[in-house]
Amino acid sequence: MLHTIVLISHVLIAALIVALVLLQRGKGADAGTGFGAGASGTVFGARGSATFFSRATAVLATLFFVTSLALAYLATQRAAPASLLQSGSIAPTSQPAPPAPPQPASELPAPADAPASGQTGENK
Image (cartoon, rainbow, N blue to C red; front, side, top):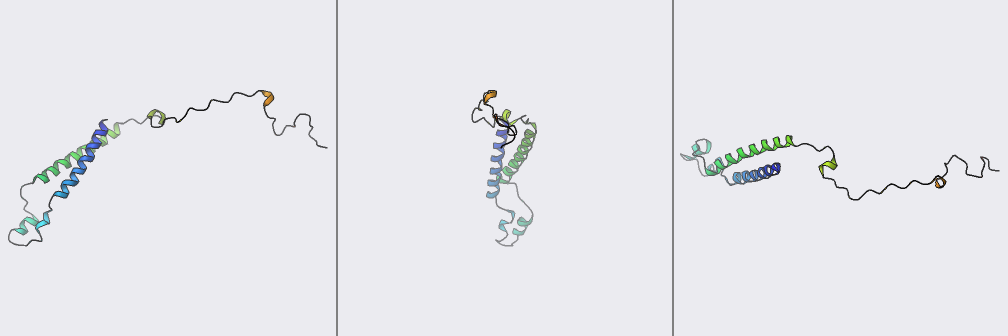
């Protein structure tokens, strides 16, 4: 149960990270507008205060790493079942057929190398 919850949250966090990264503007977004006095300083270095998107991405990235470690830990704690039947993943489809009743000795077929009754080994 815990493994499933962590896995679902891990996938949701990954999807949110992708969405936030796609919504953000890149550092070089203003590079094509002009190379005036202040433009080159912002393109290649001096970064202002962190925006909401960049902080949210950092928090989600941290949560992503935490859930990754949690999934790795939970995967090592799972005990493997001793057999497939104990795991419950394979259910019998039908009841096995009961064994056939034993036949009386008089109805058993004769062995192939033994002569049939009333015949000798020679045919004349």
